[in-house]
Length: 304
Ligand code: GLN
Image (tube, rainbow, N blue to C red; front, side):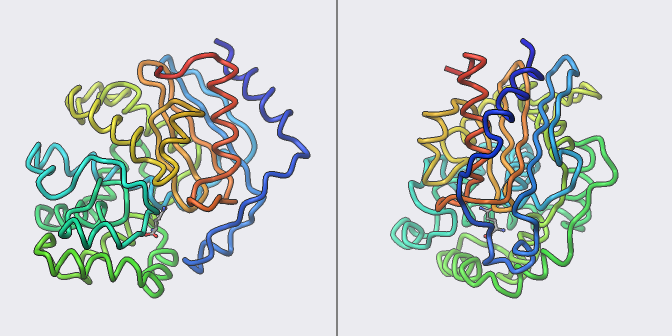
């Protein structure tokens, strides 16, 4: 499959068209990003790479980092993890509070904010130096020591993330957080502030295309079963209340972030990242969804 030609064709089809969407502003630091940035990087398990536009520029990966948090926590806690967080799509926005109240503080899944706060709590409990150990873990997964937190973004979110404070406090009241609310929020905001380029993110997501085995080192980060389950969660929950539509139109497991990134995988074949900061109402990159829909349509292959 000539992915490079397919991506070129998609980019030329999109050129000059207006797709709308708005950059996230509720985290003030994210509002400073140029809304016209647009990057794509696809890499295959055979080490073929194709990229377009701003694919080498680092951006705030935001909720995509929740996948790395889960990748670290799952092997540590094993199946016990699912007592504290569910595996069902929420059908609600990523920062919704309503379900959490009537489901007694157990979040629907680890990829909505409440679920990622539980994962943060798990990691804080087991790691000696949670922030530095988590960063080392992401560096190891990506094979790239330049990966870092963006402190400005993390602090910006800590100052204004009132809904996350509410979610964490509600879960604490139900006994589903072991650590202090402020410690959980601090770790969570740093986790979301990690910056990566499309190229770096696609390279890291190859892990999930390779069924949990790190491509360069051959190391099993997740068992094949854990990787299958994590991909299933990405497919059903990776796009919040638009997970159904993403599955319907694209047909790949993936994860979006309010920084405008989307990372997706075709297990056994490739990983792809698209970055375009303008978001739709569900908080997913408009252009990112468009590119991926066209990719699986034109190549005629998805997981289905
Ligand atoms: N850090 C963001 C938040 O908690 C992540 C949301 C997202 O990327 N969807 O609101």
